[in-house]
Length: 618
Image (cartoon, rainbow, N blue to C red; front, side):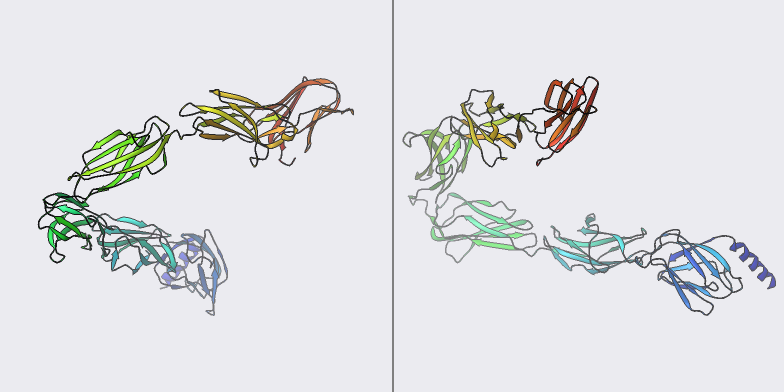
């Protein structure tokens, strides 16, 4: 026993000289260890939010030391504790879910009081827990439902939740990568599916320490409870169909899924329904050989069914089946949809003529003609089928025109419709202003050089007009009107003092022989006062440039020739003057548009360059 005590003391003396590293694991439990009398401090080597150590003094009174209580998660990392321990006392790691694990032989009641440094490591190996709160028993196709689940972790919040669905045992597909947190640790994710069958949900939760949990829900069904839409479009009622002739029964239908079958019936006495056809598919039309007996009380009934056996029905209005020997005296009906009355159609284009035609029997011929006077008709086309549109090459003319469409049924009954419209040139010319440009500065008294080009589909531009605005386009005044000569045009617009402005615009309008017109507007440019250099008789001491809000001042200590340049930032010289300046002060007004400029004054012995700003209110 004595030997063991000596060995323990030697071991502890060795340990006191080194920092010890231990691990705190996430095991959802607490532990208490004997550490001796508390006195000392905690030193962080990393971040450890909401982690505290509880030390018990020799009277077993607890004292807690906190790192940070704002974040409920302990970060992984390495930390140090400096503790002055006496002969008695205890220390506890009091964070639920984490325990402090030093070797039991390190601390005993017999260790003398001293300052010890203890290193420890925090790790989290616990996986999040997933609880399904709401998974639908059944989901209606194409309608949104919500999946709700809790993703719980010892660190309070998981970092990411990935939600998948599997429909009819096909590969998993992602729905959402986060979900919306609407209650503490509870997420909701919308789901909408466009296919019926069986489905299940899988959730992958990942916490801040990359621990992963996967859970899968039970199967639920995706169903369809919505009936199709159906309307019969032929017969529409009052038709007279001869026995033995062929007529199309037509209908429109739609469904949120797919219509997979249909059944067609007819009655001749409004009591007994006889089957015409019952097949899969959904064509929207059926060619029917009209049977006996003749009757004035006939109807068509159609039923359609979708994948989930939802159905819809529609019944036509009353029509008549007549004996094949009964003469047909009812003409077809015809109405022209396009061209509409008084429509304007561009010549030398293709135009789609459209019409509606129907008959109690069968339309066997459609004749299309056109005329410029509604008396003499020229052919467009003769159609031997009952179609309802035709693409027509429009003639190269400027004229009022008429379209006539005549239809004929199998009993030689005819009917026609006429539409009046105008053929002409309705395409406006295209015009483009080349100058003035955005950085143009026109000295008042000089002319604005307007350069432009224009094109027309008929090459028949007749004239152009030039307008000037000095208030950003609020008002314009006509400055020039002239006949068009073709190609690139150049026009000069005189200026006067009333035109001085930094908000100038040119608007140019061109017109063709069909009175179609269009215009283009230039970029904003400036009309400025002339630049005069004024001399001050005082003599400066050196050659320099001074810039004020309104002016430049060139200071000349001697008479010499100079070159003055004002340059825009894109390198364009907007002012240049070369002259002999006498000794003295010379003022140049800043008559320029708002912007940034470079002033360069060059003398044989020196060149001065300065950047300056011109604001709109300067």
